[in-house]
Image 1 (cartoon, rainbow, N blue to C red):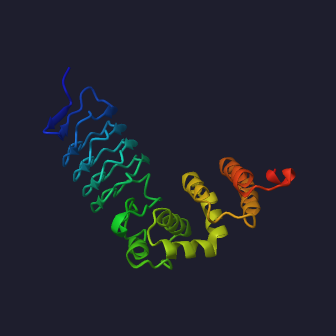
Image 2 (image 1 turned 180 degrees about the horizontal axis):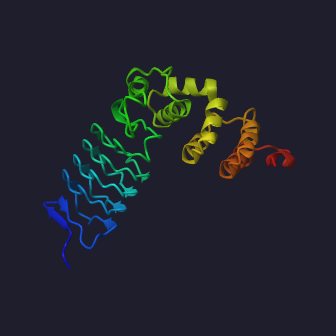
Image 3 (image 1 turned 90 degrees about the vertical axis):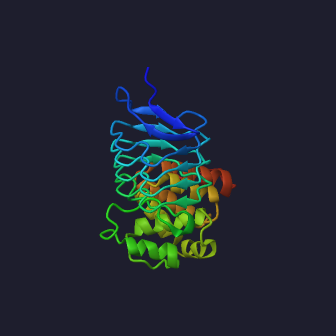
Length: 252
């Protein structure tokens, strides 16, 4: 059987599709994915990267139009320029905790990701809007580079960015003050957008949810039909806020 991986001195130089594989696991021992290694692998749906990889090169997965999921270990410290350019179907990706560098346009034209910009090192946008001019890209940059949270962009996008910056310890004091001032409004917007992962992280952080605001947020989740978020809030109310009256533990 033909080996689809061209690996030289630990560097995966090129992946050559054999029989139109859709799911692949990169072999252990690979330390770097070279520039253009998976270019035009249009049938790929999922890729699993081993813990040995530290670097993903420029244009590494460009034009992998059907790529939906990529398992990226925390060992990855560098993602190159346009690494996932035009991966229009990409929607499931783990962002490495040790990431130090993200090249320009690394996730540009990733349509499934464009609504969820994520703050990363040096104020870069990891997930960029599909059209940086139409989507007020420069307003987004103001948040990261100038720490100006009055930027005129869609509230759901701005709130998501600022929450993620806070959770990532980026400009912690100022993001904390901003969120504290507008927390019920911000949290309701996250409920509207069904941002369950982000809401879960905020609940786990445990700073902003209080006995004063949690009942109103549970009511709002019920009103919007967000059962998963409702359950998370009710569990937090029961387990952490600790109402002594058993009839107040669950708000039905």
